Length: 418
Image (cartoon, rainbow, N blue to C red; front, side):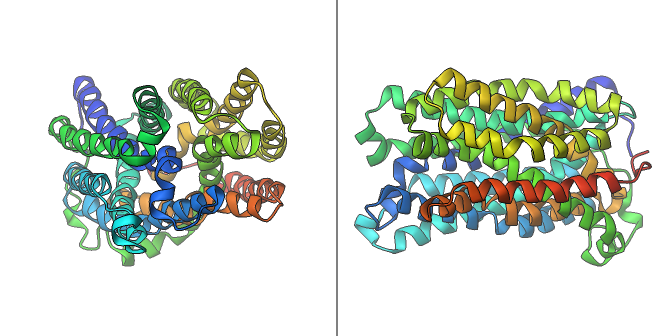
């Protein structure tokens, strides 16, 4: 691995993180604005059914993540992290611009939801590649004893992308009426995302690659080579299941949950999520540094234990909360628990694989679990609700966290980054 100066590391962190922020803004603005445009793509007049259809597209977008992580992860292991990250963000810009100009069901009928799906598949392909490369890149930048802190900036900007998405929705609700938002104004959010993606390309030119001459290994970045490391691959799959499900539940679905179940107004829910996500973003480097002190394995165990004990009561209490300040406190508590996972998740995955297969191994294993458990979280939650057994979703979360706890206890002490 190339030795970089402190200044080069800081420049590279900023460059990688800025692109990561934009990628996740582009991906998450869909979830935070879905209730504005769901009626324009679904044929149902029932708002819950319309949301199920729209979040179904959200879930299907995750199906491209494993393909994206395989494609861009393989490229990153073969030609370098920097080039692969640049290609992924160009693809995200294309997907965002497509959504901004999509025709609705009034003009093209049932094809509207198909066009929306195609655009989301393109975005899923892009963001599927981004996670694994960013996790690998930031982990490789960090020195021993500080890798948790360095890698935590992946989630600082990932959450920052969510925060920017919520903030954008708040601004739009101030500038436009609900009728205007449901008619055309929601498109502005996606057009903005496409523009920001293109601008971030300029910043990523300042990145310094972390890979040395890995071309010596002819099987670098290949599925054949990855198969040699199937044990760490399966371990990442296992603990990512619980982590991703909690992440998308507490950071993405919570807004819909507050509106549909707790009865909050959309604007109030936006303000609550804006404040909670800001706190969550600040938590990441603090918990990353804590993970360096107590051990990243212990951080993952703490997340699992607290998640098993707290997820059901947190969501159950939130469902009956009418006070915005109380809702903020409950959501922030869930994000404190989640921070034990997200602050060190990237480096835990990356350090299980050697350099010549790291980006592919990190991204591909994460993407599969994220697709199955993370991307389907809002969809399954709404399905449970529509069948009158919303608490069943809370039980489902608890079971995945028990699996996460078992795997966390089995993680090896010595890693490929040591």
